Length: 250
Image 1 (cartoon, rainbow, N blue to C red):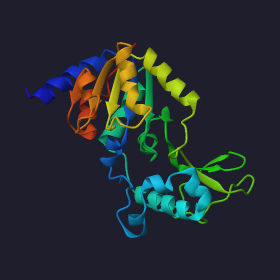
Image 2 (image 1 turned 120 degrees about the vertical axis):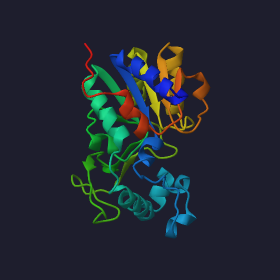
Image 3 (image 1 turned 180 degrees about the vertical axis):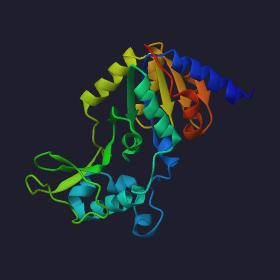
Image 4 (image 1 turned 90 degrees about the vertical axis):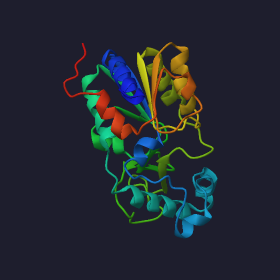
């Protein structure tokens, strides 16, 4: 048995004995579905960095330009499909009494795979939020008919319902995640670089409260050495090995 196989067996035993699990996912699980990282590779977007477009200042300076970039991003994501890792997590949710799925991704692939209780830390690419009344519209049109789009309730300008550079994640959302970590038995950290806060510190919070932490990532992260089980493989290959359809917990 290889070292990876031994770790998979160990992780599977830990997961199967847990009735309360927190899962944190990052860009890695989406990249396995072909979702690009949006560090502009072609045309106009070669001249911009995300840090220059994904900010409130950039939006209010030139909302049409920012929306053109997001319209391009939506087009790049529209054909992406969940991979076996997404489906495995959806299956796990159906078979564990308590599961909190937290994602840094904004592509909606977890929901497409069947996960129903998803906490999106950075928002959702397929939602438009009114800059005046705050109404949130689910919109899957590609391309969008009008840039910038208008709120269907009050007619004012909409913005992507995502967290931009310079914006704070709502404290109520962070508190919800920290409470889930405090109450869980096991935390899975999947495909996240471990450098973007506050998500980067959540595995450390779990360790400080004596939880078992399992990291699944082909690349080493800054906190890898602190976790209990580290599996250096793609999540789409490993997660289906950890969960079975007949798994039941009381």
